[in-house]
Length: 311
Image 1 (tube, helix red, strand yellow):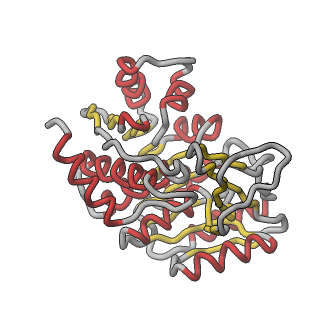
Image 2 (image 1 turned 180 degrees about the vertical axis):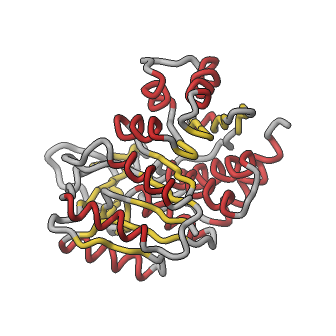
């Protein structure tokens, strides 16, 4: 069983228009509404891949009810924790003339101590205990930077492997606490090792330095069009990414995490899991707006990656 955690969920709305012109009315396409937020996106992709998960998230106000209804309509299992504040909504608009994408991300609702404790208790009450707990996404303003690390402690208590995809101080604190797998991008990796910039030739050693401190077992560095780098105590392996036409980058990282989790749940080798994760992330880029990856695209891309990866 995989449990996903989203402490700052959202209703994701997306549309498109022909050309961005200041102070003019821009006629848009029909609005698409999706349940969003890092962990929720992971659960959505796992559903697409025929995997199983339970999405855990706080939910408040009309947007929270819409979020829950959207997931129910998609038959995605979830446990929503009622909160006082309104769940946020995000907005993505694509200019068709240039294919430029404009993403408006709202700050979200903070949680009080009681609401946060309910999140922990809901996960502890899931039986049987999850094999993997995935924390993905940002924190809302006012949330303590230690929250992700607290979830890492809970995962250890449940004997579950903790996978983290976040940024900034919350990521640093989680890594200090100790986790199974982290998926930083290049900027986040720089932050973890205290550097402003890393040459591509330095990425391997930077990731290795974190592993050697014993803070995490696996690091998967997401490098966009360049694919990903898998680093463990005994392994350093680059995974290429196919070149595809970019429609949207929304949820690409979450799709990658979902693909990795999906394969690990099946006891597949780490390298195969990361290859599949890159396939999922790349497949998400091929879809417009807030849509995520499609299973048929993932299969084709996974075949390409396995064929073009060095032994």
